[in-house]
Image (cartoon, rainbow, N blue to C red; front, side, top):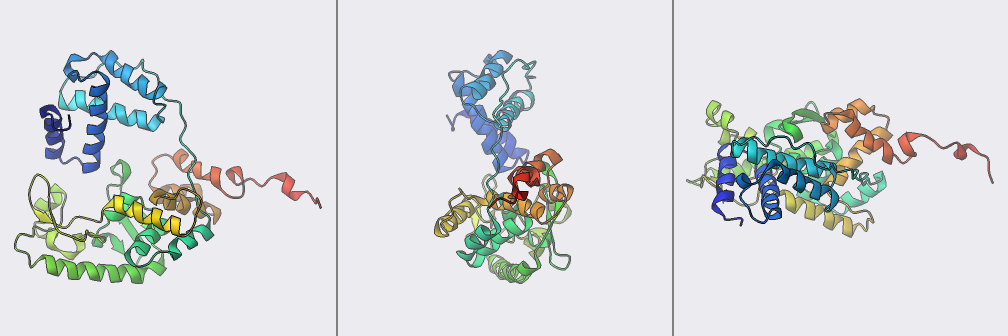
Length: 324
């Protein structure tokens, strides 16, 4: 079914409009799931009630989280409203998911230290930045040389989750390693420029038109580039993409096993730990919200649940009892 003319035309429709690979893959997954749920019937043959039944199935039978159900709805709404140009209509009667998101897994400061102690070189620098700056995995690998401001000790994150921009802190201890990595990127760029087919790094369309030579400049190169050149899908341009984010998660999991940490550790665990440790150190919730790039402070407040001092940081009165 992945190669069906309908799904291929849907994928091409998103690619032409420069949807990110992550968005394309996600929308295709849920639209494919929706079509299979209805016995491979074409979406144009289905009534709005079919969407409601599918979303209710996700909530009741699959017990997905509310955010997952919302993502499926976004994909189906895109299918009808944007691609098929057939408004989805009133679908307010579906059963909404009530499953709450899990509390984030957070490492102690000592556990972070143990994790990082098992790593060296590039993996150590990437893990240190995720913990030290609270970066999401995709934000880390998309970081470009121009976004590193070592003098002001900050990193600029462009088009993070929700297409938002923000500035995050940079630990001064990581500056030497970052500068060394950028020098390696410079040497790699010189090597790539010797390739006749090399078309430069991928650039947003607007930037390509405004700065036609930027794709071969050092500032626009990824701080963590892929090890090999590859041909860009759909254009066949020879480019050097950024480090593979799935490989990064494997590195973190391997380090967690080596350091014998019992929690299930992922890249996002380091971001969770960053937020929680900031709060433990006395940072106010609004500052942490800005560093994480959360639109609503309520999203950030989940970290107050996992503070080691107790729920919401409240010290139990039992601790004051002079029991022996």
